[in-house]
Image (cartoon, rainbow, N blue to C red):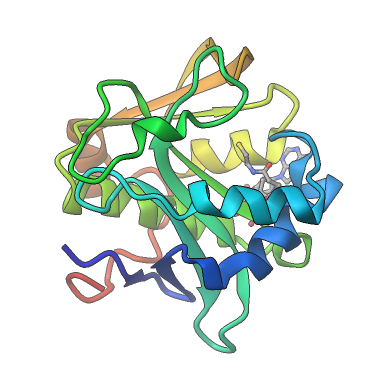
Length: 205
Ligand SMILES: CC(C)(COP(=O)(O)OP(=O)(O)OC[C@H]1O[C@@H](n2cnc3c(N)ncnc32)[C@H](O)[C@@H]1OP(=O)(O)O)[C@@H](O)C(=O)NCCC(=O)NCCS
């Protein structure tokens, strides 16, 4: 299982303790956390790193650090993680090596503010879906956004996720999205769901 991969402009590596810098940049910025969680203190971010680097399944459940290929800058993170329903954070005890939790698995992304507005989240979304359906046994992934997070709703729509109204997640009412393997394959074969900048990446890249 190759857990490191690339898309047109970006590269993806499983988050490690060396990635505290990007975690700090994301979670101490109120603009980034606005629709996601409370802003964190640096001490809280440091404390949460032990959970943030956990991996489940055969390594495919967890968080990836996302870098620009051209200059190596860390611009954000993307995830495949168990979706919490009445908890405000991921239930990290479900992220265990060798185990596939029997709950919905969500995709998601967080970008530092300086990286917004360049299509990176769309590129990341396409690539993490491709990873989920090409490299893991998952038959379906979900995503949620705060109802006011219009940019994220737009990204999820552009990458072909199907809107399914409102659902409970993160102990609140969220806009819900879902996509299964058959739908992903079908829209990929039709070239629908927007441009996939990773479509021509080398196998396993
Ligand atoms: C949400 C986020 C990931 C978007 O990243 P991004 O790289 O700027 O997204 P993209 O450039 O790929 O696409 C954004 C799309 O939303 C649109 N958009 C941006 N702000 C918008 C708004 N207020 N209302 C409607 N659409 C909006 C953009 O025009 C673009 O759509 P287009 O290509 O059709 O023009 C980024 O702002 C972020 O990390 N925010 C903080 C964390 C977060 O909210 N993560 C998502 C949690 S569900």
